[in-house]
Length: 212
Image (cartoon, rainbow, N blue to C red; front, side, top):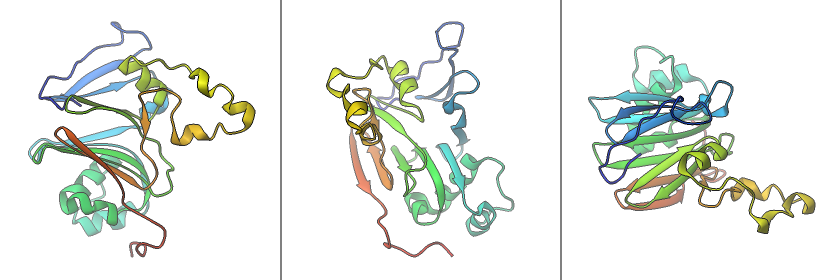
């Protein structure tokens, strides 16, 4: 996602290695997919051109029919990204207080010039990102693919070679092995507003009762 008003780049698998396919969804926003069978295929997207909102999501929402009813939809959207888009149009940033499930999503709101990214409270879905303030925001459900797209070195740094030997390889959950790539932690919200970004925790245990 371009943050500087520039155009996103489109490329096809014939032009690059790794069987990548790119499409420009709207000005400054492009989505890239890798070959069949990769985890990136789980990332869905939905656009409301009139509202200027785009949603990318890897998610399973609990009781989607109940959520659709509370939103006021006449039916349950077939795509989870569309369901989350309708939830955002209904509640804005407050949708995190209204949904339950496993999710990682990014919402681009061109009306307000804001990008939201969030992961579910338990961190069941992964979202990796690289942010160059004021210029570009990349994200993916797979850190290796993100590293390849952004030109970063995907190899494990020498300073971390002993992690598997010492039994602390779980550290990679909090600190991705590719330098320059960040992982959005469970129950956290990343907000990008122009050249500024903020990271906050939106949920803690027992902070609120479950949605009923």
